[in-house]
Amino acid sequence: MRLASNRFAFLTAVLKAREAKGVDRDTLEEIILRAGSMAEAVDFMKDTDLGGFLAEYGAASFDEMDDLLWKYLGRYFGRIRKLRPDPSVVRLIERYLHRYDVANIISALRAAVFQRPAHMIPVGTLFDQGLLNDLSRVQSPGEAVSVIVMGGMAEYAEPIRRTTEIDRRSLRQVERGLDQLYLQKLRETLQDMDDHEILLRAQGIILDYQILGMILRAAGSGGVSAVDGGGAVSGGYLLTPDMVREFAGLKVAEIAAMLEETPYHAMVQEIARQIEQQGAYVIDRIMDSDLIMRIRELLSPRPLSPCAVLWHLIFKEYEVRSVRVALKAMEDRLPPGEVKDYLVVGL
Image (cartoon, rainbow, N blue to C red; front, side, top):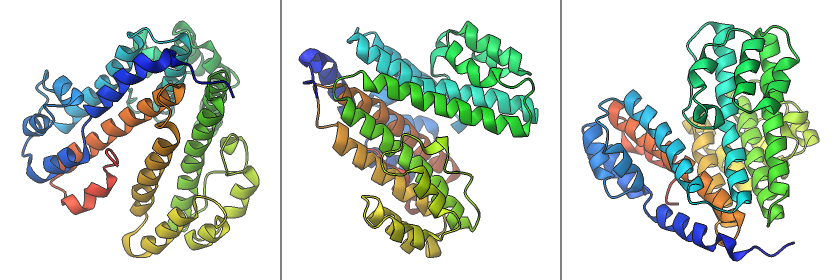
């Protein structure tokens, strides 16, 4: 393995400082307990980077705040690029953020199929190119391809070019093709970086959790998982297509038993213990906390490495996600006990 270069020293020092100005768990719990309006919630966050951004606007509703949170995330990642980091870091950030482009493309295609408004996330290359409005209005595969190519993302047009008409059946195939392509391209980017073994392991673990979450939700509801043993799980760290096939039709406790020799056993066992009394919502609550701790332990200790950059991207996403949960809970007056375990920042 190549030694991690100290060219990341300045960048990671800046990221660590910004991480220290993140919204912590105590602040989020205070918002849920004491804030009576969005303005009061923002005031609780006034000493954080995110709170400073939100204070510049007068959002009064959750929907307005939700839009601002996504805008913050996009601008924040743009600020990192303006630090002129090593070109490999720029490639990592841009490739990682393609996940939002893929989400926007899928949202646009679903809107065309189901004839409903598309929800666009203001993050990613197509947003940077000012093409989200065009993307949200596409009505055919050809129109989608044109917008994607115009945005300089021709490689993501390929799964759409394979179909002449988007309907419910072909939509699923296109979605899978886009997801697989994103994972493939991200893996190729990570493969060329210092500490690529650790980066690829992190990517594989994240994919494992995504697949395992879908399997457990299906098992918890008594249904059949939509995940098959094919390409959707290729690239996972521990879960193989054969393992996924073996999980079909099993109960959560039986899946936990099959994972006994893996690091995921204790987590799934705890889900099996709680799901009977508390329902399927415990799956995301337990898995999110477990995943963020596992990824932090893997990536965060390597400050002079792309690992620190990838960790920071993930950290900021979870920070924004947790703030969204807290603000929604505050607006809906949900009991703090029902929400606090979903706040995964500051673990």
